[in-house]
Amino acid sequence: MIHAVLIFNTSGVARLTKFYTPLHQPSQTLIPKIFSLVCSRPATLCNFLDAPELEAFIGPKGEQDERWRVVYRSYATLYFVFVVDGAESELGILDLIQVFVESLDRAFENVCELDLVFQFDEVHHILAEIIQGGLVLETNVEEIDNSGVLQ
Image 1 (cartoon, rainbow, N blue to C red):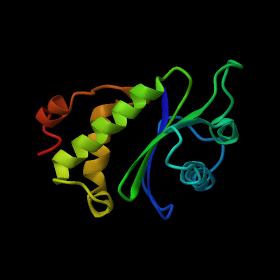
Image 2 (cartoon, one colour; image 1 turned 180 degrees about the vertical axis):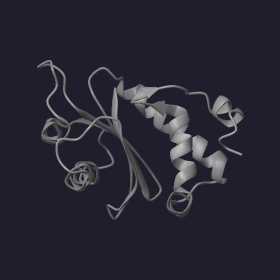
Image 3 (cartoon, helix red, strand yellow; image 1 turned 120 degrees about the horizontal axis):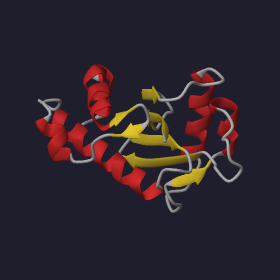
Image 4 (cartoon, one colour; image 1 turned 90 degrees about the vertical axis):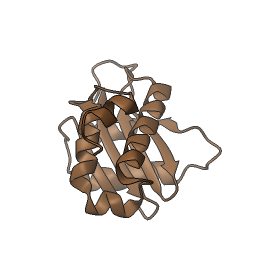
């Protein structure tokens, strides 16, 4: 399950935050924690990491083997970050981030940080076409485009 979708700029300012599970602590403390995990990693490392320290914010998992994972991808000056549990495929989430970015590119004709700031309602609408309640609904950019969201 996807528990959170976050977009940061390189300064750590959150440009989009969407949580699909209730938090045990305020999001103002979770967001800098996730940003510090992501921005401190060298570019040569993989784009997903285990994050057991997030249990204090999101809550413990029911099974011992399950861990919180942070899956992210950097595009220009933005970090697209998904917080998922062990049931999700990390490579599948990386593909989902690519679908989300391609959908944003179609909607805003080469999306930039200002589009996320000034047209946040459209960004949330596009995200809602892709993910509902932490579950993936659509992964085909053509179908998202044909749904009328990107027009």
